[in-house]
Image 1 (cartoon, rainbow, N blue to C red):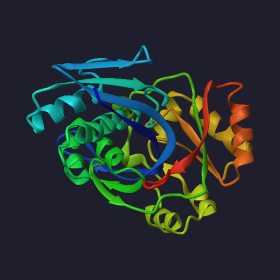
Image 2 (image 1 turned 30 degrees about the horizontal axis):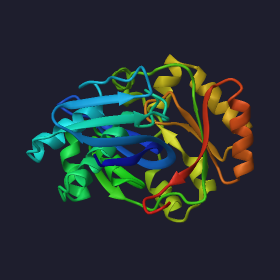
Image 3 (image 1 turned 180 degrees about the vertical axis):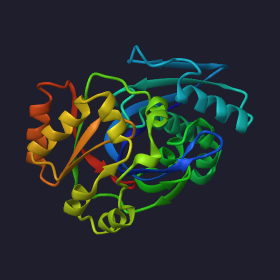
Length: 288
């Protein structure tokens, strides 16, 4: 039976701003997201019936608690498919890390099933359906880099970072996104990202300006809960990063580099303490 394989790439936040809380409990955000070339490998193939999800990672859900599983359910229902699907996830992206690991797996399943069953849905159509799975899933279907607004589902594609290296470092802790947002005190925020300045710098691939203006309003909340995040940021800057930021609600911290050898050196030093440390390139749709 034919199998479709896709790379499900992680994302980082160049910025993350929270503008307010909606009546439905969700938060209005404005953020710049960029994919990086750290990825899970997702394989889907047709079976007679049902959904079977397997993985080399023992501690991700294998049922409806997994966005990839829910993505398969959504495709079966939306497109009236009377077949089943087997999903296998080779997990490389750290779990519960602020890197959209679950969301990108779900996006990969939707894109793969669209191809496997010759559904012919456009990327935009899949993005619209995927909002029901989670706010980051539409971006992961879009791929590359984007300005995200609303709850994260209103996406404007932008020019992504080129010739940039990213050192990712996830400490051995897990962070609850819901708890971080619940603890965020919007009225006490003293600084917000200069999103317009960052967008111009992205357009010009001005890594120096981007590094100097990275900002995530959730960082202070997570740092208070887990001071280790602040420590990794400090170390990243000591290891010559142009800038360092926590991605999403954390706890992963990244450093931005133009020079590969500086990035590799930082990765080698941090990996002595933190096992889940990687050096990767930024990824833009259309790149190999």
